[in-house]
Image 1 (tube, helix red, strand yellow):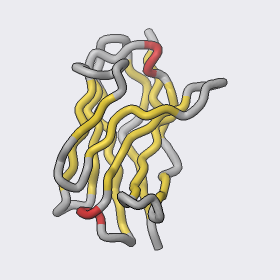
Image 2 (tube, one colour):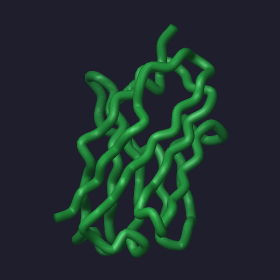
Image 3 (tube, one colour):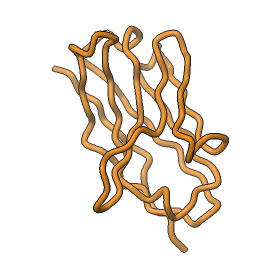
Image 4 (cartoon, helix red, strand yellow):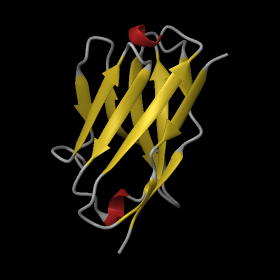
Length: 117
C-alpha cells in the first residue's frame, strides 16, 4: 500500500537547521509531484515547497532562500533542507505525493518541528 513516512523533525534553536526526509513506497515515485506542507497550532495547513517529477520547484514566500526541496528517485525519498529557522517555522510538517490529474493524493502522518530557544 501507499506509504509516506516523514523523519528528521525535532527541537532546534532559532537560526539552526534541520533536514526532513520522506520515504515513499507503494507507488511510482518518480512520476509524482512531491511536496512539503505544514500546519501550526490553530492554523490551516499551508504549502511549504513542492518538486515535480522533472525537478521544478516551488516555494512559499515565507521560506524562499532558507528552505530547499530535493528528491532522490533512486531512493524514493524527498527532502526538505531547512536553514535559518525561525520560531514561526514551528509546525507539524507533512509530506505529500500527488499526480498531475489529482487522482493520486496521499499524505504522511507528519513530523514535528519546533524552533525555540
